[in-house]
Image (cartoon, rainbow over all chains, first blue to last red; front, side, top):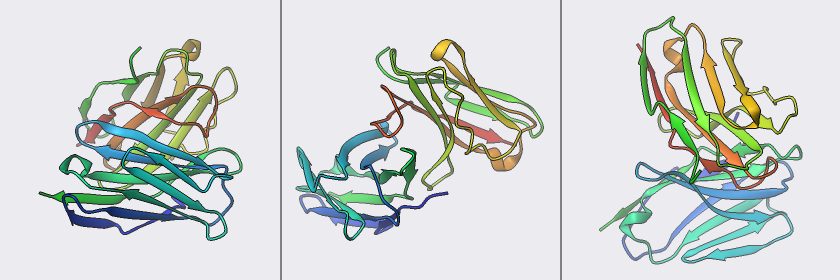
Length: 110
Length: 114
């Protein structure tokens, strides 16, 4: 069963704007990962952030982790049409099993 | 190999038939995972293989589902007596050493049970 909660479920923004997606969870984690899925490239890993890290960057992507609030966010800056995809957070539990959220569907309007 | 590959890419079968789905992980990756994804949904964990250890089968939805991994590389997921609710995309992933690391996904097999 999925125990991560992502919001919003869907997000539609204009090209060039920033997009923020959030992920919350209930139990402790070892790390939290963000993945992107679109029809062209399938499911692709974006960023892994460990429980002792607070922020990571990769290009136009910024991930934050607040373990006290049990939440993470993914920020995409200066969005492009190619960023249109579903974004999933997946956290590792104490057994290092990856627990997946239901995803946020992001649409970038030209 | 360059990435995780899966075959077939699409499979249409009749209710009650058995199907076999194949996954070739990235060469050298010891961990292999199978997931199921229904339309518009997240990933449902099915089974995890780690080296020569006994697999974690805790996600298999029924005893009609089984999987094996031969020689620590190629894996096959078998669904016996398929039902319409088995229709989904079946995704395979591998990671270098252990679960909890970055996973690299194959393109998936889209299964349709009529």
